[in-house]
Each structure stands twice: as C-alpha cells, then as structure tokens.
Image (cartoon, rainbow, N blue to C red; front, side, top):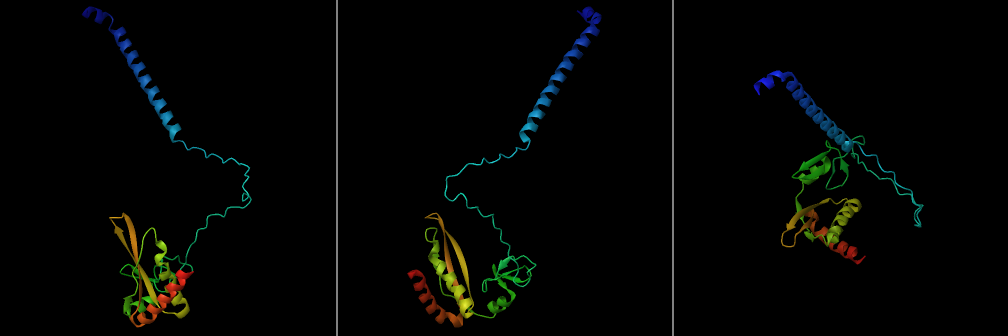
Length: 198
C-alpha cells in the first residue's frame, strides 16, 4: 500500500487538487447565485402606473384638490414659523415670542396679564369619545368673549383614563379673572342655552 502511494503520489495529489478545485468552484457558483438573487430582491420596484378607467360617476369631472399644507407664521415676525399659540388671544407665535409656564403658553403681553391676575375656574365639563361635542360651547364662548368684549380667559383640558370603561375622558375647564367670575358665569349659561337650542 505504501509503495502504491509512493509510486502514484503525484497522481493522488493531482486528483485531490482537482476535487478541491471542483468544490471551490461549486461554492463560488452558489455564492454568485445567492448574491444575484439578493440583488434582484432588493432592487427598487418600478411603480405601477394607474390604469385610466372610464368612470360613470356623475362627479368624475370634478378635480380633487391637491393636498393643502398650512404653515403658520409668528404674529409678530411674519418671516418666522410659529411654534404654538397663546392661550388667551389664540394668535400664533415663534419661539422667541411665546412664554411657557407650567405647560401653558402665552404671548409676552398676555403672560404679563396672566401673571398679574387672579384666575378662577368656572367650568369642568366632562366629555367622552361618545360625546366629544359636549364642551365645544366653552371654546366658542371663550373666543366670543375675547373677540367681542376683549375679556381674557383661557381653557385648559385635562385628560383622564377611565379604566373600567376603557376610554379616555376629558375635562374642559374655563379659567377667568376673579373680577369677571359673576358676569361670565351668567353669560356662559345664556351662551350654552343658545348653542344647545340651535
């Protein structure tokens, strides 16, 4: 046996190199196929062109409006984009013009008004996912009082998770200056009655 190996060692080495070469070739071929398949999967898919279908819809001739993107700019600096609105006047302001106090935002003028006044909460209207409109009259009332009579107030909404019923409820609270409490409480009742009767 040893003599056979010695006599044919060159042939045996040649056969072994041939087998190794075949195996390497096979592995390279398999890797090439895998890479090719991977490239085909990750290649971007060409978008499918929508087919034009003749519509029998009587509104088909009406063009759909393009998506409207609104950008708001600071009330004081029209070249600056706004970051939020004042709780009292509801105008929008840039970062330099807006003052934050305990998660509430005010413009600089109305922050002074807020800080120099005593405020009292006169509503605590509860809304649920089934009754989101319940507190809408408070926002409308607040806006009307400011625009028509320049009486300042602000609305804070608190959210609470109702675990038993599994929903989020909100409590809408209108805050007014102490000197306006009596007048605005009466006005609010009239306003609510008018809103609900419509």
